[in-house]
Image (cartoon, rainbow, N blue to C red; front, side):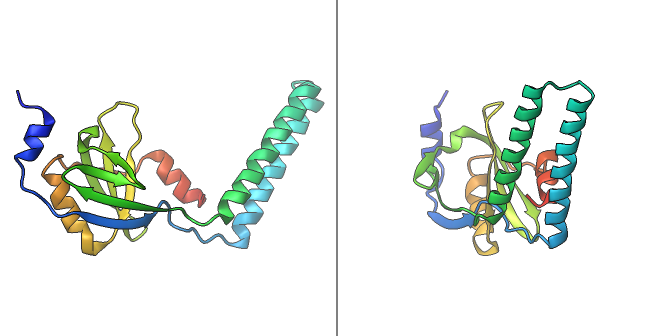
Length: 173
């Protein structure tokens, strides 16, 4: 049985492709979106106060829940104002280098491409059961070359958006 290094060396040498991509698409949020977020925050604080008033929460639970809600609200407001982080990618026979960190292609069992918000996403599916998918936006000029290189090493699968991704997109977070 051959190891991964020998089988990879038998494949044709490919070009090195590099690209940069933002981690997320900047969402446009209207004043209505912010009003709804503030309204939900106030409603949750009111529920917290009602639980205390009816004796379901004690004072310590009231304070800790209110503090947690405030922290979550502040974190959400800060995260909506931060610019999207830019990442650099380099794909070659040796693997995928993301911001200087090498990921051998043996870390992934498959890859897929899907359209998200008018842009194309490359999704690398990890071998590890609870590993994180690597998702990168790719441009149309390099997309075909990226898929061709990855197809030499990994099978291509359909990768639908999961529920969390759809929820985050719907909530414009």
